[in-house]
Image: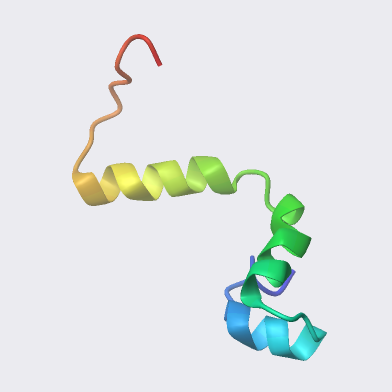
Length: 57
């Protein structure tokens, strides 16, 4: 999958003939189900969070 591999979303959109980058992302979002975990890890790292998960989440 191009986007998962690092390709620019706009470039993929144009190549695939999608009307907007949103259409492209919505079309291929199911191909990387671990994206939520990866994004959470990146945000935690950027914010300097530890591995402690607050209770009640």
